[in-house]
Length: 126
Image 1 (spheres, rainbow, N blue to C red):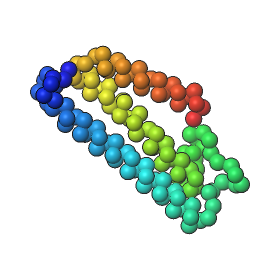
Image 2 (cartoon, helix red, strand yellow; image 1 turned 90 degrees about the horizontal axis):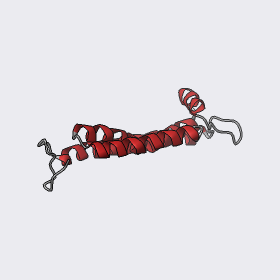
Image 3 (spheres, rainbow, N blue to C red; image 1 turned 90 degrees about the vertical axis):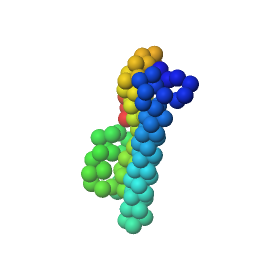
Image 4 (tube, one colour; image 1 turned 135 degrees about the vertical axis):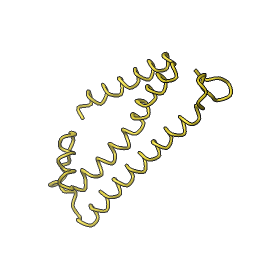
C-alpha cells in the first residue's frame, strides 16, 4: 500500500504506474478520436452512412461487419466503442496494479467494478 511520500512499500513510485496508465488513457482517447474522424471523413466524402434510410447497426457483430466493409457509420460507432472501453481498460489494469502492490482490498473493489461494467454491457444487449 502507498506511503505518504508517493511510493509503494516495495520502492517503485506509484506516480510511475499512474503516469503509464494516464498515457494509455490518452492513447485510447486519441485513437478513438482518429477512428471517429476517419468515419466522419468517409461520411462526408461518400455522402452516405453505408446503411439504407435511417437504419444503423445496433449490435456488436453488425458493427464489426460494417467496419470490415468500411461503412462510415460503423467506423464512427467503432470509435465511440473505443472511447467507452478506454476507462474500462483502466479499471482492468488497476486490478493488476493493486494485486502487484498486494493491496487486496482495492484489487477486490476494482474487480467488482470491472464485473459490474461487463455485466452492464452484456445486459445492454450490445
